[in-house]
Length: 172
Image 1: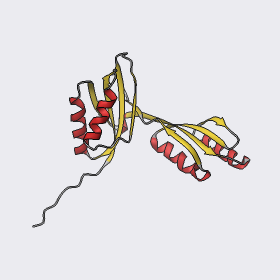
Image 2: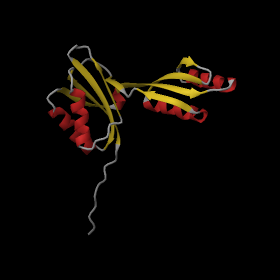
Image 3: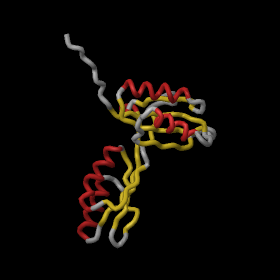
Image 4: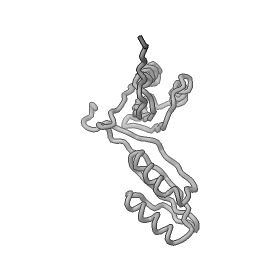
């Protein structure tokens, strides 16, 4: 008889954590990831409707077993109020990217402006040799725009990471 092992497939997950809004919380959360060798794809932290709380939105690629372990470890942290794994089909999530693209000739500038329009992006700055575009959407949308314009040369890129909220009512 041969022993079989089940290999769990990694997939992309959004973890939302409501945490106390005080110094050191971000360090403790990221240190938990580091100590257990979990990789953070992106992390955003910002204020909420309650002044004393912040919301962390963490994206990670992991299998279900690792994700469950991560959630359990997060819930043990004293500054963490609530942790949820958001179902991407029932979640509104967006990311913002600022992309500075090399554009030295009028044809290139025109093409980049057309692509930005198609992707509902905003032209934020036009310099002598570059155009800076703001794109907001899902990570896939941002990746698609980046892949479309990277042959012009990307001078600089900055991404915010995902912000997310569950769809529907207040209890979601």
